[in-house]
Image 1 (spheres, rainbow, N blue to C red):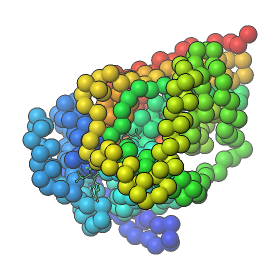
Image 2 (image 1 turned 135 degrees about the vertical axis):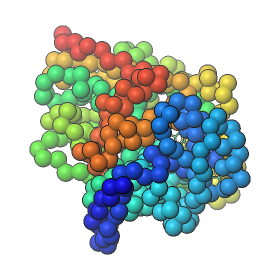
Image 3 (image 1 turned 90 degrees about the horizontal axis):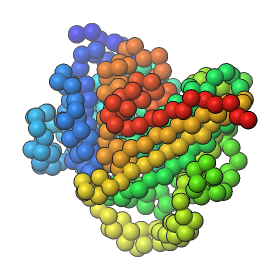
Image 4 (image 1 turned 60 degrees about the horizontal axis):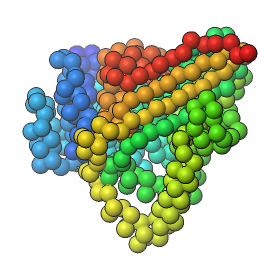
Length: 408
Ligand SMILES: NC(=O)c1ccc[n+]([C@@H]2O[C@H](COP(=O)([O-])OP(=O)(O)OC[C@H]3O[C@@H](n4cnc5c(N)ncnc54)[C@H](OP(=O)(O)O)[C@@H]3O)[C@@H](O)[C@H]2O)c1
């Protein structure tokens, strides 16, 4: 067995020596396997994983882990680890090469595992869409780099189709002219208890969430520019849809990738939109969102909302089978235009579990840590764009890239 010693520094100036092995007991551990999405990840790995994959499921509740194991076609080991017990997190993370976590809300439970993965030199992937949590992880970028690990958040529907769709678009454009890219999202789906709890947590303290999200350190650029396009709600004739600015975490992830990769060119501008066929759907959605946000401001309202969809609940297989997503990326650079369409099934759960599992497999097998050139707190496009797009295409998610055309 080979050992690697790494000197690591935390954001508070502490340092430690991390020991890692090239042959740990597991390639992937799925923490949160007792939850709704973690369960789908476990089933996905159980059905598609290569024979040589060494993996385990993890959670805080042994009886629930046993119940999950009973559903799988092949036995795998189980690990007990609780977010409130840092030693159990260290014990878990030091046994695996990649730690995949679906334990959320991430703002509540996520940071101890990120810190543990940096301390034990373990690659990390999650499916958060919470901007305040991601901002917190970015403060550990230098420590993660020094530990030689990849901390890759947002490996689900937030934000893989957008991040990798944008990467496909800029990669298809010739030349080094400034790039203007717009992403348009359409989706049909139902949410789980975990997503609902994370959403209520964020809207109940909108100001705090936004302040934390803004505190994220930004990577410095050497002469290049990465900017947001001015928002333009409108009827978009190319999509025959109404489009409105969509302030999810996705545009921030796309711009982070643009900051770290030269392929986004000397001056990259991005705009992110929700796309709707009917204007009335938009009006109803905005009214619903405003009502939920208002109700979540007071503790009794927040309690009431949290009980509407419980942790562990989520859409059943037939509901998921009727769900879908489509992300269109329309870009131009100089006189060239490009279009990328990313399409798949149920965005939140069937496809999210596939996306995060394939990201973990990609880090473990296509770009192992010892050979990786991109380290630290990074996006999926920065960590593993090309092999991950290839994996997701093989897994049934479409990335259709048009040949660039000259604008008239
Ligand atoms: N970005 C995306 O596209 C996307 C898509 C889907 C989900 N998500 C996010 O993923 C997260 C999970 O969603 P979900 O619907 O799967 O939630 P869920 O069913 O409620 O599962 C949550 C999991 O976290 C575990 N957990 C809770 N507290 C813990 C603790 N102290 N220690 C260890 N484990 C703990 C739960 O364990 P028990 O079973 O023991 O309670 C369960 O396994 C949410 O934050 C959601 O927003 C994001």
